Image (cartoon, rainbow, N blue to C red):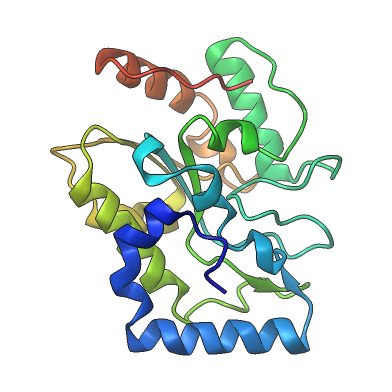
Length: 221
């Protein structure tokens, strides 16, 4: 299950792989892929890490669950495969990008173009059963991704953490706010986007911070 994770991350979080919870998680996930339809594909479980090595990570956007519809989830939070219709939350993210930084983003939901610039698109749970949202929650993924966030906070400085919604904000409690930039708002879901997500300007705020610390900005197109 771990063969796709980038070597820089393996070194950083190898202590997690030997823990009991991760062994149980690995056995569960392997069994699920062998007996059910699970998203994303096995080779995409750690795609967020593969496209965004630890040493290049400068922005982290935390999601919750992969999409559970056919051909949607691709291993990146909020993203879908190219040529798949944009889910409502992603539509709203693109609307905010256009409003915030004045550019119309490419209407391609893959988002690999952000990941390769140093944006870690991290879901709290990395796998899900088809048509069954939340089905792989509380199996160990959350402990693993908490450890990833804590390692990033401890080992690096001047990262930008973008936390949308209460779930992401809770995940962010382990972040050292004296070392990093935290950008929070409501979730881009249609149920909450008008309650603080629209107009929150997370993309321009991210680039302003990166520019201030002398780091290359993100092209949000």
